[in-house]
Image (cartoon, rainbow, N blue to C red; front, side):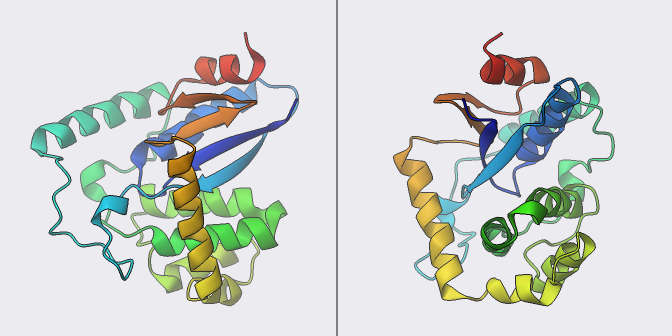
Length: 207
């Protein structure tokens, strides 16, 4: 049985950040470390135009009632998972995560031992520090903070092969039936959402 959990996620998703807080708490009570493998997912796929840019004029059906519910759920989970360091939804900048996802895939493929730290640092940059993780300078700074060559990681953002690879992963997620994030997958089973540590334990250990 694999000791790796796969996570479909998008950095702009607050529940992906919170899901990792839950995973960390599950890991604290686990004797053996559980590696995580990330799969890119584009929450704003329906709003991207042919150039890959987000077209904010495209309606997404999310009204103020939707965002009020999101705010309530974030506040509840922040308290439940001890994530007081997380900014509120209205305190974080609205960013396009595509560049960060390209950079993350590049690091995962070329420097896998450093990827988890980079992944954590990208989430922290956005959801704790309110930084624009779509900005190449921010990406370079985040990469350097975990011991990577920031210039190399930022340069990968503009390489067509890496950008195409991220869009291929977006397509793969759709083909695999992933409709929302975070989605945790282990040994053919899945849990969707920022589920509590006990549910992640059941997913992985079947208990």
